[in-house]
Amino acid sequence: MQNPACSLIVKTHAFGDALLATPGAEGLIASGGSWRVLTGPSAAEVWKRLPGISGVTVAPFPPSGTAGLLGFLAWTAGNAARLRGTDRAVVFHSSQSVRRWVRFLTSAPSRSGGSRPLGDWESVERIGQGDLASKTYARIAGVEIGDLRPRFKVAPDEEAWASDTLGPGRWIAIAPGGARNPRDTVRQKQWPAARFGEIARRAGSHGYRCAFVGDAFDRPAASAAAAAAGVPVLDLCGKAGWGMTAAVLARCSAFVGADSGAAHLSTAVSTPAVVLFGPTSPEALYAPGLVSAVRTSAGCAPCYSNEVFRGCARRKAICMLDIDVDAVWASLGNLLNADSGS
Image (cartoon, rainbow, N blue to C red; front, top):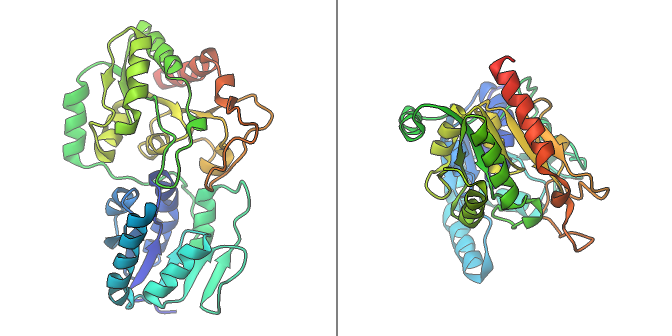
């Protein structure tokens, strides 16, 4: 079978989800042909760094509010003709609206996630509740993947910046916020900032320095965690893009944080990670062995996989509060001892 001349990978959002799709995308690239990516702003940084991608088209997706929707429709109308040369599309989504949008843009046959095809132009791979996302994306792509670790290439200048910023010493990266992506904000995934501060305090007493990572949204949590720590910390929240953050993570002995883009990024750069889980499931989002999972003891968890969060059914959202500092510190200690060989 001859490889297509121009094919399209579609994964619009979010950053962490896009990382999970990179092993499957890498398999498509290895199969031959020319591959482009259609994505949104939150995930573009992932695809611009994946070797073998011939180009990245960034759409204003997902739209938010009336102005966002109008902008999205205008973009769609203006770009449909440019994407009509696509021979086939691989759509790492199950949403019918996304799949129909891609069909409108490209008029190409596609492989997608979903329970049934939307037409004779589409084949689908059923996505089961709780299925490991990276394996699902590989099935949609129709490729076999041995290494499910996300791919994210750090540039030499970013490595140099991280080296200059951190300087000497032993470091631990902490993401005190998280819990937001372009579709929704899930504060139920957050752990109390004061508890992250306590982890930083204990790390300091063991000779480690701590770098807080995240975006501007995480600054209040970082400030509260720093106040609770009572020791000097390096707060990079909102001050470093994804590439710089990846370079910082790569220089750290370990990462600690809730399920988030930063947690997925730590696995991409092979930094040992302690990840806290309340409403989400590690089995659905992280390949075996990539993270040390600390789970809530709440019997109702996990309550969602990889869709828009509908909110806590019990209206209390206390599952993350059931994770105590001692459990997180013990898990972190195991990683640090393994890293030091003791």
